Length: 254
Image: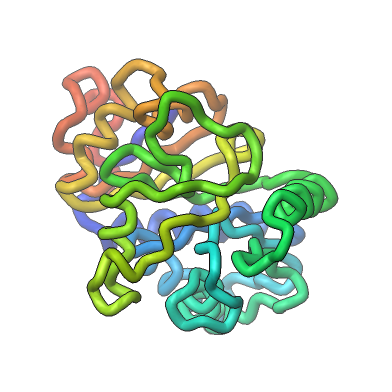
């Protein structure tokens, strides 16, 4: 595990964009796993700027998003596909034929989950997976629970997770779908490299429990401790609850 602490969100986003750019330079046919939510917006803006200036070429990349709400068609502006189209896919010029997304309107949910797993395997697995972390320690829509699902699955969302997603639904958590499709923990841990982004003081407790706490299904992000190539990229606010040993290891990189 590598921990990097940045002075602010802008510095973190710039450094994360450079990391993605280096991965693309090393492997133009990169298979990239992507999150949604507020945290990656600044990163996606940086990547779109790099693409527009010709410093990054996304034409050969293949993408898989972590999750999607159940019941929202791909064109629904509240859905994650619309979010990604607006923030990354269109601005960065990623070909639609290279974008993979879960279909939250599939008649056969189990079949759709199997299809997605097969598509990831068919692409050779995920080379670089970008993640955010929820305030309750969830990653993707793997919520705290007595047990975690290994592979892509139907998830029931916690009230706090629905509240965190309410902005696109008129601010009403009750309007947020109660279920979603999500990559599972084994799917996530099978990625060759993982970068976790966390910003803001509200994420500090989840970061501490994930990085410096015991492995527990009540903090799904804690299972990232098992992965051999995880980088946590944090701003100062998200890092402030880390213990002295973690802080010494991390240092201040920007």
